[in-house]
Image 1 (cartoon, rainbow, N blue to C red):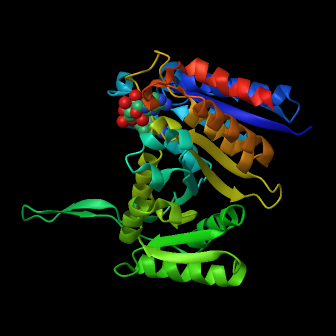
Image 2: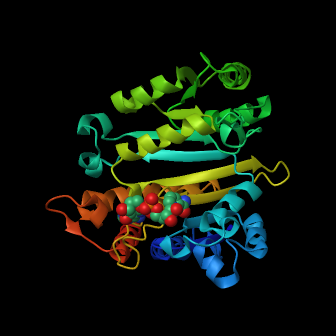
Amino acid sequence: MATFKLLLFPGDGIGPEVMAEVEKVVGFFSRSGLAQFEVEKGLVGGSAYDAHGEAISDADVERAHAADAVLLAAVGGPKWDGVPYEVRPEAGLLRLRKDLQLFANLRPAICYPALADASSLKRELVEGLDIMIVRELTGGVYFGEPKEIIDLGNGQKRGVDTQVYDTYEIERIARVAFDLARKRRNKVTSSEKRNVMKSGVLWNEVVTALHKREYPDVMLEHQLADALGMQLVRKPKQFDVIVTDNLFGDMPSDVAAMLTGSLGMLPSASLGEINPKTGKRKALYEPVHGSAPDIAGKGLANPIAMIGSFGMALRYSFGLNEAADRLDAAISAVLGVGLRTADIQAPGNAVVSTAQMGDAVVAELGKN
Ligand code: NAD
C-alpha cells in the first residue's frame, strides 16, 4: 500500500476547526486500506508567531519541502494586526508559496445542484457548473521590476508596476491547463489582453504554438480578459479550463467563487514543477476562504472547502482519482439530503455544526 506524507497547517481562526474535519476524512481513507497517510502538523501565521515570533519557522518550511502534499487552512486575524510587517500571518503563507515555487494555482468552481439557489446567478445558469481556473501565480505584474512609487519632485508621484512574462513561464502554466483539460472536457480558454499589451501578444503566441506542437487534440480558444469576465457571468457553463496570467486570473477566480454560492465551499491547489527524477511535484492545498474570525470557535464554519482541498490532494498529488471522486460524491450527497452549515443555510434545511458536517461526510463515505 502506498504511503503519503501529509503536512497539515491548521493556522488561525476557523483553521483548526475545519482542519479537524479533514483529519476525520484522512482517517477514513487510511482505515479503508486505500493508502497510508503519515500526518504531521506545523504552525503557520498567527499561531506560529505566538509560538516562536515568526510567521513560519525554517523547520516547518523544510518539512513542507519533504511532504508529498501540504494542506493549509487559513491564517490571520485581528489579534495579529499590530505585529511587524515581516512576521505578519500572511508572510508565512507567502513564504510557503515562494519557497515551494508554486506557479500554478488551480481553482475549481463547482456548483452542486443542491446549492444552485445560493448563487447570485439564476439556477439554470449555474446548476451543474464545473469549471477550472488555472492562474499563473509567481510571475507577471505582481512581481515584475521595476515596482515603485517615484517622487517626480513637482508635487506629483508616479506608481510603476511591470507586467513581464518569459516564454518558459507561459509554457509551463499552459501545459498544466492542457493536461487538466485532457482529463476533463478537453477544452482550454486562454485569456490575456493582446489588443493592448505586449505580454498579452506573447502569451497568445506561446499558448498557440504549444497547442499546435503538443496538444492538437485539445480544443483551444482565446478570449480577451475583459470579454472573459463578461462571459463568466453571462454563460459560465461554456467553459472547461480557463488559463490566465497572475493579474487577469485574480479577478475571474473570485467571480467564479460567487457563482458557486459560498466561500465555505471553495477549495484550491497550488502546484510546482514536476521533479523529473521522482515524477512528483510540490503542492499546497488550501480553501479559498480566510480565517473568518467573526465565527471562529463557534462551530459555525463550513468545512467543505477544506475537505475539498484534501480531495484535490488525492487527485493531483496522490493520483487517487477514485477516492477523490468518492469524496466529491459524498459531499454532494450530504448536501443533497439537505444538511447545511449556517453559511449555506436555506429555508427548510437542517443547520449543522462544523463537526456534524464532517461526520456526515465520513458517514456517507462509509456507505459505499
Ligand atoms: P474570510 O474569508 O475569513 O471571511 C469572509 C466572510 O466569509 C466572513 O463573514 C466569514 O465568516 C465567512 N466565511 C469564510 N469562510 C467560511 C467558512 N468556511 N464557513 C462559513 N463562513 C465562512 O475573509 P476576511 O474576513 O476578509 O478575512 C479574515 C482574516 O482572514 C483576515 O485576517 C485575512 O487577512 C485572512 N485571510 C486569510 C486568507 C488565507 O489564509 N489564505 C485568505 C483570505 C483572508
